[in-house]
Length: 354
Image (cartoon, rainbow, N blue to C red; front, side, top):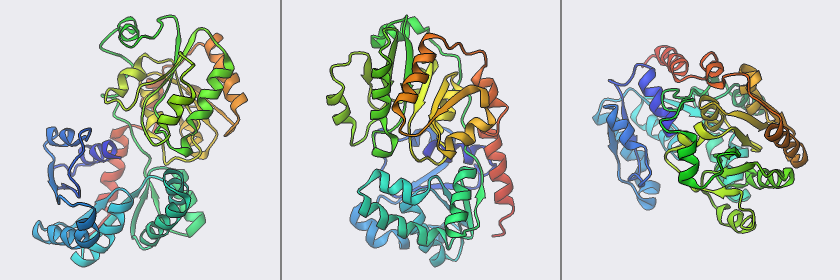
């Protein structure tokens, strides 16, 4: 979401007339320097957990009045909720980009009970938002059918200058650095280690294919990472690399990207993999199929939770599959570039009368 927000600002024409307002101090692996390098104005409220609960709405409203802000565009559950009330207090417009289906996403990354409660708060705000955008046609359809909300789909786009199919180094140098075999087909997954991503099913399918010429790389962290490392510690061809800033480099030198997720918005990870030249194997959820409808020759789907089907596809790819199509070229001709996404946001902003 942080990278998508950056692309929206850069490519929608609002870079000189906006300010990014963060509520909390940035963590060490923040992307904030990318915003500063792009000469985007950034401000921070320096809230903590207590002051967020007590003062976030008033502080945002005061900031908007002081800086003569015409509209707030929020991203994320907590920002959406507090921005809703702050916009009312400051009497300005509020725009939301929704990047998931709340009940599926929130119950999948926190306890089911707490997730359901938070989802209800989020839905309260979403149902009352006049300017509501979905990051995919799938999410727009699900929200309309489930809650009758009016929502405009603007599909995610990927930065094809950052995520490209050519690397600055050779695959030999890359494999030597990280201890991979140059002969191996490299399978990569960049999902977080949370329940709805089902990384354990990917690991089980990889083990079932029993190939001597393939290795599986997991990038990312999350609450289930420690358990996964322990469970698969006896399999030397499964690598847990943790959270990495140079994701593009891993994708550029990998052959196949895999996702077994049961819910997404419109997954940036898949778009980034395609931009870097990876063929993709994806669970058959509508969000994944939405991507492959536009780039049909760049991947295949398997039935959700069908480990055997995934193992068979992985086996086929490792032993027989040769990719005849440039996935990056296909992506460039799809709706999923940052330029096309930015143009859609530019039109959307132009229709809002502040």
